[in-house]
Amino acid sequence: MANNRHPIHGSERQPVLGSRRIGPADPNERFEVTIAVRPRAWDKLQARITQGAAQRLTRDDFERTHGANETDFDKIIAFAKQNQLTVVERNIARCSVVLSGTVAKFNAAFGVQLEMYEHPAGTYRGRTGSVYIPRELKDIVVGVFGLDNRPQAKPHIRFRGGSANVQRHDAGTSFTPTQLAGLYNFPSADGGGQSVGIIELGGGYRPADLTTYFNTLGISPAPKITAVSIDHSGNKPTGDANGPDGEVMLDIEVAGAIAPAARLVVYFAPNTDRGFLDAITTAIHDKTNNPSVISISWGGPESSWTPQSLQAFDQAFQAAAALGVTVCVASGDNGSTDGVNDGANHVDFPASSTYALGCGGTRLEASGASITSEIVWNELPNDGASGGGVSGVFPKPSWQSTFNIPKPPAAGGGRGVPDVAGDADPMTGYQVRVDGQNTVIGGTSAVAPLWAGLIARINQLKGQPVGYINPRIYSNSAALRDITNGNNGAYSAGPKWDPCTGLGSPDGAKLLKIL
Image 1 (tube, helix red, strand yellow):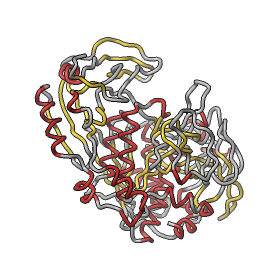
Image 2 (tube, rainbow, N blue to C red; image 1 turned 90 degrees about the vertical axis):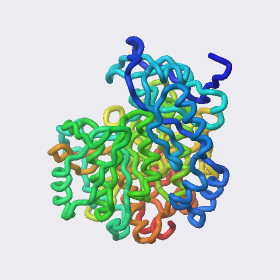
Image 3 (tube, rainbow, N blue to C red; image 1 turned 180 degrees about the horizontal axis):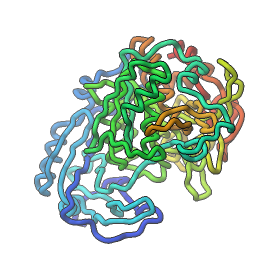
Image 4 (tube, helix red, strand yellow; image 1 turned 120 degrees about the horizontal axis):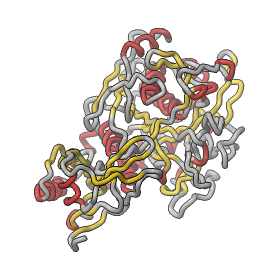
């Protein structure tokens, strides 16, 4: 590599496990990449986060004080012009520049060799090794996303019986989201005046299904839903209830049933690291829809992400915290291994980000309006278990310092996952409607929108967003229902925080008081 080239730290890629190289990518194939650019005055922003609500920024203030520097943009644009790449978009608040070009031009510009790979789920365009940039950009560019378009994340969704077409009503009692809101003592509110952002990486919804579903719950008119297209994706229902449509409909129906007067804004993006990041940054900095809470039910083991992705996502969540946006993220459905078959324990990202509210899973049983039993969700090997453990990437945050967090798997790690929990066992799952079928779904996918709907209610009642709640719930853990029975594989539940269900499931009225 020429002396004027610098490898982007943490950009290294390896082929997907089990894939094989087919040959070079078509040199004339045209696509887009997103360059993540350093923000301004990040140390001051982190200080704002620790100071809490009093120091929150508006989206306009964030753009002025912490958005990307125009001088940095000018250098990237000059680099693009030199390499015959087209500047499609630049966004100061999102700290990003989108470039368009061919495989051949991107190969030359970033010192990569893009290849086509085949794996069990299909084909993808990939690369190995690092991405290279000119040395004059090494302190400016945080990461380059989109050269590789492998599937990055999975929906954390589980059907009762393994399929939308299989019903096992004898195995447990299922619930509507509104029944769960009652059991968890959610404060009376409808989310009026709030906006809930929902991130989706495939699939779509059918308005007729949603109208039918909400009418069945006595919610009319149905919640207002807005679809936002990210990176040329959109609301595209597949017609397969067992596919990503199940995730999309679950998220909308849970959040919408709990906060029916809130606007639900669904950000549809491709399932790549670029698409996922662009959806999150778009939602966080969306001045049109202004979400105050975001629900994310997609993720993957930390080990499946590049360090540049981990950094860029975490940086985006820090921006959310500074803006007073709560980010609720499913912790995964494969117990303490997170589905990695290497004999070690793993946690799911982005739930493991310090600035996300990681949402784990329980098995809940009730009689009438009262909970009779709630334990860790564990139906392994076939029907899943609550994801949880200790990050190997993100250090233990100060608000977890007094809790018994197990030893991290790697130096530099230590952040315990999850933070909170809620009903997730498909055997005691959520009654939903997907592609014309009524079915029962579980998974931590359901817990993220459950918490997002609760936060929307609390935001409405408080008259302002509660924002980054992690520090406050850890110092007021009695506001949650402690789950002390069960395990998710390597870890067992116990008093206070544990790596199965975090601090526990919600008591909405108590949370309203402490937030």
